[in-house]
Image (cartoon, rainbow, N blue to C red; front, side, top):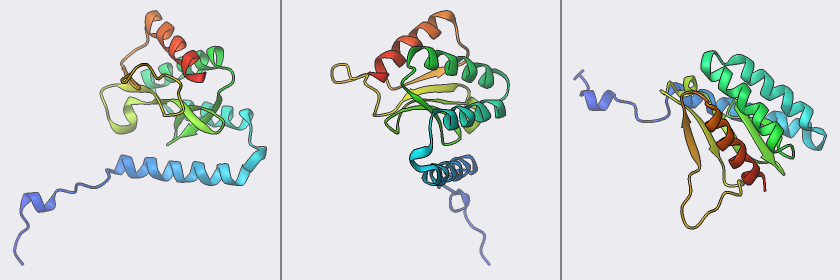
Length: 151
């Protein structure tokens, strides 16, 4: 049998980490469907706390701090998990989220905003930020953005 070329061996589909994230999201959707309308902030709070507890090192520290900032500056947002990571929603739609660096073996964590975020400014605006650590200035900027995003 002829040997495959190196290019033929390269898999260009989803990585193992991406497949795991998709499975996490599927589980989240099934859980949300089972809970239905009786799901509330307490369910989401517990899920987010559990997701943060699974993180390690600076990912965990940043996720905890971001959770505190979002709760303090946008109390109307409901905590939930999204692809296994902490997220915050309005009317069921994700407004902002944290993605740990370790999630996809990245050199930085990400704090981002989804389309439900009210951040529109002109014809172009940032929707995600790379984080290697959180400074007081970073925390203030996150608080400002979360307040605006929550509407």
